[in-house]
Image 1 (cartoon, rainbow, N blue to C red):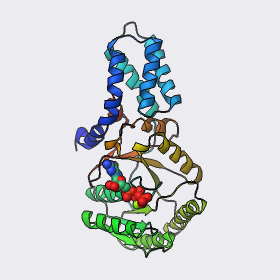
Image 2 (image 1 turned 180 degrees about the vertical axis):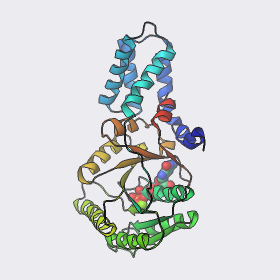
Image 3 (image 1 turned 135 degrees about the vertical axis):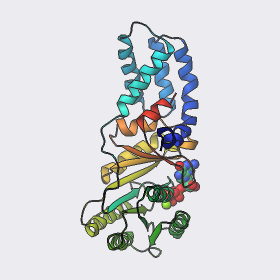
Image 4 (image 1 turned 135 degrees about the horizontal axis):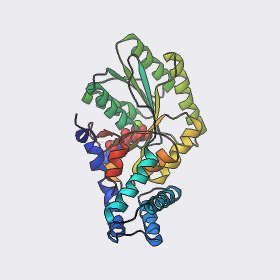
Length: 303
Ligand SMILES: Nc1nc2c(ncn2[C@@H]2O[C@H](COP(=O)(O)OP(=O)(O)OP(=O)(O)O)[C@@H](O)[C@H]2O)c(=O)[nH]1
Ligand SMILES: [Mg+2]
């Protein structure tokens, strides 16, 4: 698959963030110089795309320092310097996310309504198309609709779904799905969980229990615990990630609803401030609307 094809939906879904940033940035770039007033404007523009104040100042200051090394200035140079500054903040050496040979488990967590179940459905299709045999555990036994929603996704994408009865202990559903993962030639189990807020102690304990029971049945740690966050919630989703991370080990982030949001700037904070890799972005409601994340493509499509 060509690079452009692979990330096309990531580029397209940044349209709103780009629209928000471009007008302001272009006005700054067009002066061709970068004085302290312009730096404040850059900071403001970044904050409006939901980058935190601290990160926005670091980016503007970093760009200013870099500019000192240039004899000349032009709109193109300023743009490149800013892009480079952001790229440095989000290009970290995280190990790649991969489905290794043998058995793999990814567990999906997050607050209510952020797109967990939809993402599980999309990932089922994504990895099936890449030659993996995928099975899904519907561990949201809280809402009857949660299970039905996944069964529909399963039929749509040809992925087997293991679901429990309403109000069954979600950890036992995970356990049953792991037996199936081990007994049959499946490569990857995706565990969907019910939405919850970090401050609901019993619900967070339930999540830890699912993880503990799953690791025990699996015989090793889960490969990934991915938090799903809704980009339209802006900085709130950065806070949510931080709060979840304090309670449960998170290995990566999937940012949904980027297609309808101008707040794509949060991705910079997730990587830079929270030191977590962004693995995928959700770019729409359909099964194919998921894209791998690339720092390069992200920055090149910001402004
Ligand atoms: N536009 C857009 N909509 C999305 C995306 N991902 C999910 N949605 C929509 O967001 C809504 C909620 O999605 P769900 O997958 O049910 O969210 P959830 O986190 O499983 O919700 P709970 O299980 O209730 O916590 C649905 O209407 C989805 O179609 C996305 O990337 N883009
Ligand atoms: Mg759900």
